[in-house]
Image (cartoon, rainbow, N blue to C red; front, side, top):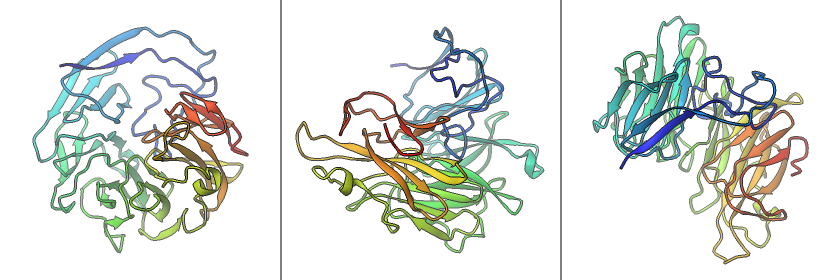
Length: 363
């Protein structure tokens, strides 16, 4: 069975945000470490048709992961093999296959590409988790060779299925933060792979699995975690010291019990979370999801949150459709949720993205 990845000429569904191949890198999950899922480069009038330019055929699926773009190269993780493809022709530049140590099976993670010129290093690295190989590896994008790897012993034999990553500047040292499937977040020196010594506790256990919910803005990092027997949560940490700053549950921000009295369930924060400074307020947008045991018309759903990142206070919250591992995108005046369930409490039948006003959360 063959599986496909294809590139189409950029189509612009919204006038505010677009992409320009070769001029606007999409180098990590959600484009940037703020997970904006958006570009500010203007293109002009929206274009309404697409033409296939090329197609790359792989032998495995791409589960939840998305390709990333750096300059003229596309990097994609197909479950147990990693490829670099020329963005103009679709030609394979190099490929890493299952080896059980660095490239494992069952990896659903979107890689991160980062150029270290600002840190005085003439190198661009691709950072990838190892799935069931339980490693985390830095790869030279020029030829696919390994620069460093942190193996299963570093990660206490935990799987690295999703493991989103962010890179922050800690006093001139580039530090990469990533997660395993045990709810641990790790900090390592991005150029060497050595454990970062700035955290008193490294790794930090956040209490639940981290899927796509790892976002940064400057030094601070924001972590969304899965539910266990209790609700999931969002927490803020200082990325350079590992110090806890706030969490949504402790600040009284979890709102499902207040918004959907018939189907309280437990909330999980498994999707991507987007950060921006809106009206001079550092703001995090995140959508939880919940499941219920009742039969229709009672179904699972979610809650869209706007959180003040300075102290974890709630700006607003409103019901949304269930997004599971999906993220949110930032547009000029609204935040867009990519929920996939057809039923939204209070709104009726809705399929596909829904936009919410940044000021009030109104649909």
